[in-house]
Length: 307
Image (cartoon, rainbow, N blue to C red; front, side, top):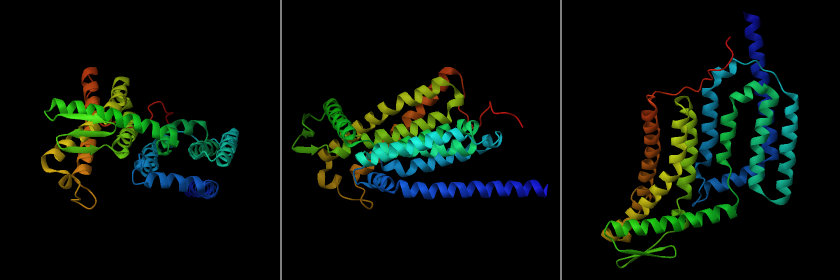
């Protein structure tokens, strides 16, 4: 018994040492990429402010699946060195070409390759989702962000204009401005809804994964509800802010109430919660239609080998 316990401790220490070495070398090789990602996550108008949360959520899911790991033996897979070398090669090219988004993507390949090398194919299959989920921390290229953000801003402004007219406040859109009454409200890039869209999609993908035991209908309902809920929430936010400006004035709406948070930001936060509640409701509706009750989902792999 003592011998087995000692052997297990040695394996843990060995694995910890390998991971520490890997982390140190990766930090050295990817330091400019890490700095770039952190800057993008921390930008005042960042659409990826949830980027810091993604590795944490990924780690939590990996930890929740730890019982599955123990069901599979550790069988190192030497061929995984190919994935590691390929990831480093593309990382080098991306660095020379100054394509930071591609460099960040190779980091996921590098982590997956090292995991595969050390633990083997069976354990990699257990960890596929937490590793793939890291994709949501990678900032997109500027030309994609600018183009998508601009289109979302115009869409949200158009829909908010129609909603304002329907609710009794005559409004017209002029570019990215809303004109109503004596007021002129600018819909800036931060109001495009791209941030709430990206955040809600990331959360919906995680939620769908946790609900996967409830069937494909529930998973599909959650994934399909995310984008419309985010867009609708942003349209409602612009509409509510316009009404508040009309009723109490710009100064009152944009005056900080709690720290830097004004009514404009508070409204956005409340409606984002409402958007996620819509995704949750979509899951409940799918479960009701398929006859599956809402019960906690397990991350346990039911197909794992029995010990």
